Length: 514
Length: 119
Image 1 (cartoon, rainbow over the protein chains, first blue to last red):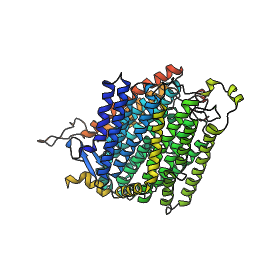
Image 2 (image 1 turned 180 degrees about the horizontal axis):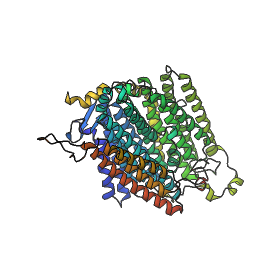
Image 3 (image 1 turned 135 degrees about the vertical axis):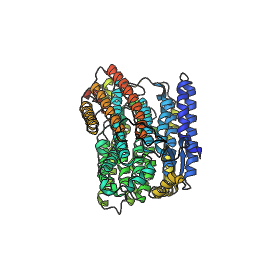
Image 4 (image 1 turned 30 degrees about the vertical axis):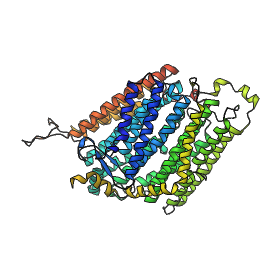
């Protein structure tokens, strides 16, 4: 067995308790170990991506129990890619959190950060539906701590909503898994695929219920429209570096939809034929619409970026809901892009909020506004999908892949109008914050207590050099994704190909029995 | 017995959903606990109900046995939901103590500059 597969889970799982138990009172050491851990994770992620890029699906049997009796981790192109994305995202964020002093405004930031990474990597690697639930819980528990990091009454209230909503989601997840287990007698995803295909079509009512319940759970995580309303308040009130890390959490939902609904409840499985794509597609379009309207209507920069996250999930899920290899390749490229772009904008939003508060209104000039506005401009271009950055390529791929879909005209209209409204919304926010000269009289009327609602504890002396370096690191990621769009797309096309031949996955997982 | 277990799950779920729609945090947390009880009983029943049957196979005799996997699943689910309930109680308490208000929704005051709810 290839032990690299379990390394992305084991490394943070060891590091996080080590940080809590040994380094609790040494912030400097915590920072060093935390950054070293993320760099180590990046190294592991690069290694397993290189191993997976050959196209072999590798299986890691935990406790050496063969599937479907034991829990397996499965490394294929998609899971390797997502682990790599997690590590690439974590590095600038942890550096930014250190540079901006956010990790010092509460306890155990770094430990929770690594527990969160463990949960995210585990969710990407696992090949067992119940284990997926467990890793969802690991990442959620860590996210509860990170969400309320730094305290403050508004943030805590938002935290209560966030925890309550996610507890509800977990309960629904268990109901879905219970239903599926009652029908099929297995929760191993590969075994599930085999059993689902064997069930006679007249006995599938309960299984359909389970499949739809499971889709609802993933839609909660992915913030699809009727289930999106937890996201804006949570992301806007979370510490912005944490919100930037949460950009990967909505993608965990998207990943799970892709994984489960190509493998077990695939488009050509009679049980769920026409059930998933047809419901998901209108919901995704509405998600995009509500996200862009939210961008246009927000009066707070963090809230606006939260709506950017919703809008990008809409575009992503439109591509996923087509369930064709081309569209999935586009979706995987777009996942990479939108995660980095959303995180970038959250970090820029934090820079603005630290200097002049979060309201989108003319404000007195702030230090380093030139650099910050340039970064905001780059992030806005990327998220709105304008050339020359990767958002343009991503949206182009999504549009191209949907050309042959039955309602291509509606998809094109929604994506293009959505992009336009996003551009208008981001341009409005950018020009109000950075450009519009502030009115001195307005400032005297603008009472300071009204100015900033999220109570920030006084920040320790920031280190702007490192902060800007880390944000530029995220920009570099986007630029590289644009420059190497060809190889990246080749990889995602092969990934999509692998996803749409689930036989490979099934025989890799259950192969030893045959 | 199936009817009894099924109606227990149904009643617990209904009561839980009623409570999580309340406006204050305490009933919401109670509702979440009831929902987790409901899902635990439901998970336990997914391996079919068997009376007086051990969860292990007997190699020497052909005696009935009950499916052990849901028991393992429900154990995990109990531990997680118990821990989660403790977490939400702590966060709700600190939110209550810092804002002197235990409404679960964000009030208009929280969103003066749009950081909270849609105004």
